[in-house]
Image (cartoon, rainbow over all chains, first blue to last red; front, top):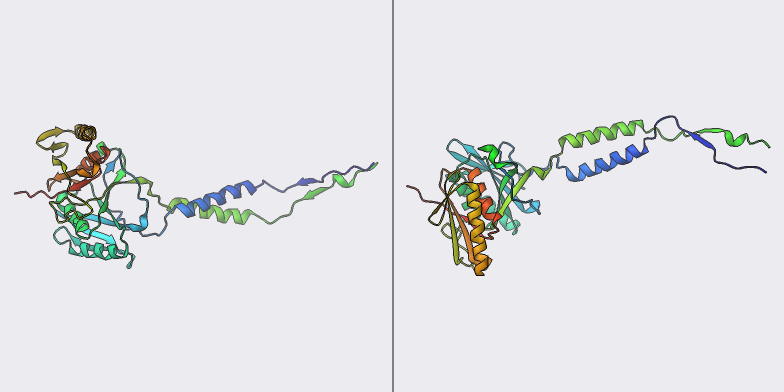
Length: 157
Length: 151
């Protein structure tokens, strides 16, 4: 009786199919999660202080305006991202916060759920921060977030 | 019986995957190096930028708080709650947690409790974040900042 069996297969090298599967999964993950070339209004020159215990993430980043408080001598200037312009621009300083109020008011009209993120260097005095908080209050931006970096707060002392 | 045919060797001659793997690896390394994630930052959230003493007077939907907790920041690790001096970040945290506990025991509503932080003008952002974080940790729902008029 004639026996039928599968022909013996031989490949020329290593089977790369599982490698490609994994690599493709990693690429799709990074493409979805990584933010490349997306302007989020963060000034990398501003280093926020560490805070370890409490805090959270922002759930709806589309409704957020980030206010960078950039220290200039004894005072500070404010920079933020106007989505219409797409770049970080100056919006007043601690002596004149009207440009910031105008920006926040304009953004609030388009986005009623607008939230503010306040970023400042750890050694920025409150005298430079309070005009930005006042600007949020005057523009009726009720929710605001003080940004900190995850870490040990005692490390800066 | 002869079974010569089944013993034949077949070579799999599919598409050459090597260039694909090269390109995919380059893309993967690029994404891994240039991608940024939001994991390094944390946000201390509140819903009231300034107290009623500032320009943002509470509106109709935000009634004036009946119970006020005033936290003064006089310097790094130097705080006052009401007239009581508090030294150290942990002591402030404990004092605020105790106050919160007292209010809960007394049956006070969250909407009636207002924490106002009064940092002096020279107080640094890193110290403000600590005091503010302590108030958030004590689960006070309404935390505001006020401007101190200094001489």
